[in-house]
Amino acid sequence: MAIQSVLRMGEESLLQVSERVEKFNTPELNNLIQDMHDTMKHEEGAGLAAPQIGIGLQVVIFGVEQNARYPDVESVPYTILINPTIKPLTKEKEEDWEGCLSVPGMRGMVPRFSKIHYHGYDQYGNTISRDVVGFHSRVVQHECDHLQGILYPMRITNFRTFGFTDVLFPAKN
Image 1 (cartoon, rainbow, N blue to C red):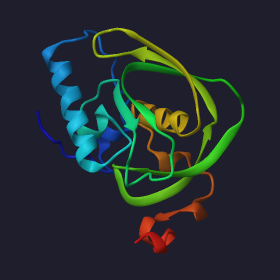
Image 2: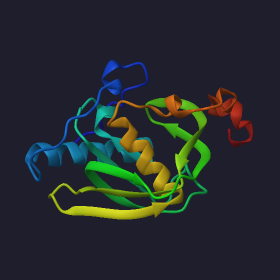
Image 3: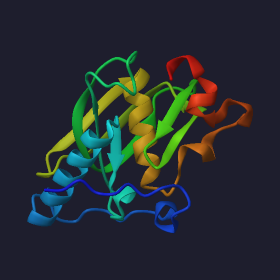
């Protein structure tokens, strides 16, 4: 398939609510997922949502094993998640650094629920249902926000913890 351009913050389509997928295992859906996979790998991302490549459907992919952008995080299994729902399993939130392929070169501290349950479907319509914590929980919430037209800077509560990666972390450059 093909590596797609990732839309950047400011693009109107990133602020739209995505539509549910109605048909699974179609050539169009399978091509979209392959394009998303190729694009995420090329960009060394931990996840990608369909709206980030200009497709307003409720499709996200995520997964981390070894990733130069996230060297200190636990692995997250590669997952294709369609029409997801998220339910917090605790009121507790944790703040941690986030970045986004649609907000290149920047990082911010974002509060997220520390433990969630997510439910959705794979590309064939099989149910996915998991309770997760830590980075896995954070990645799912981040990617699913894209489906609601939310970018991580909209969740930042203290803008003193938002800036360019090379300024915030000069030792890593």
